[in-house]
Length: 91
Image 1: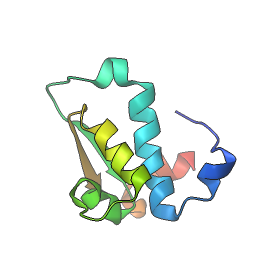
Image 2 (image 1 turned 90 degrees about the vertical axis):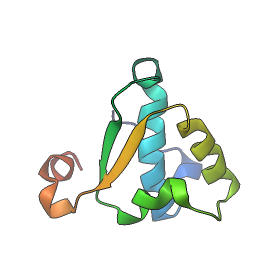
Image 3 (image 1 turned 90 degrees about the horizontal axis):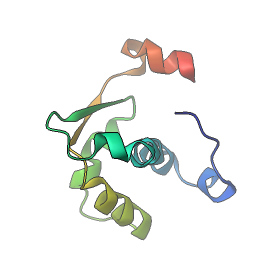
Image 4 (image 1 turned 180 degrees about the vertical axis):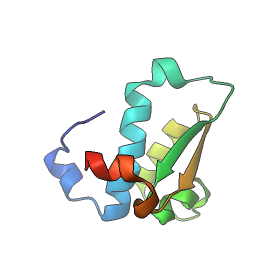
């Protein structure tokens, strides 16, 4: 999925932008992804996102996103950019 960020989204910090890159596609394809038995594996080169669902202090946007992600069976796995050539090619 490729989509330009809105003007307010461009002002998010890097962690917010990376989290948005997870939330938007899951929401876009939710009709296929909700209720899957096998977890959806999300690969990221942003290590902080692996603990996104375990954060204790969330701002309102992050809390809203985390609430929306509860309907999905997913895991976030860190994979360094050097080992994730497919993602580097797209960017």
